[in-house]
Length: 274
Image (tube, rainbow, N blue to C red; front, side):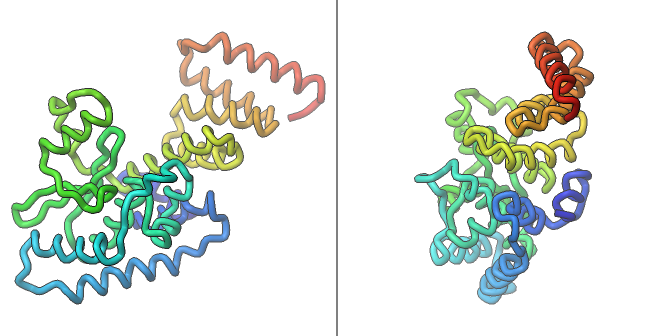
């Protein structure tokens, strides 16, 4: 996971998004070889590139991309099994042509980058979309909904439907996000899915990566501590809880966490180890 870890450490990293996302898929598919899927992305771009003409404007270029991606390849949102962790795995998204908003957007952005089409991810609350700016033309693409094009007002309306809040007063939500921010959001999605499904080993792997991205994130420490308790890694759990309190000395749940630490201390003293 060398590329993934490089991307997590620096927001300005130029590590490729597609390779980092494929490496992330190894949590679910430990023996995954990214190369065949990178080759598929290359082939998509080559096919689309062969259809583009030098005199095409931004709108025409987008139409060619969408004809191939949505009409021919039939990429679409997975509405039936939305919370399956495989929907966050780029290899599975490429193979099934289904996914959640952010994983579909990663595939779409990876093809667009190969075509030198200036696109970027936009992390709306509750929904991930893509922004396209070229030659004075701007639109937003809802990759999950078969490439539906949105203007700024429609993006705010979408965010309002997802959150129940009027976010038009926060135009910054339409700003482009970095590749690192995309991967962190994917990790947060997987963290929630694995914790909900009690897949504690995989949840622990995700939390390890989130802490590489944000070593001072107190919430990740307390969550990893709880995961380590489930995995019977009591010494590691105690260390995580202690780190949480060091970062959050005024935490509302301080007493509860201190009680957990004390209980772990008593257990470790009784068994004589971690």
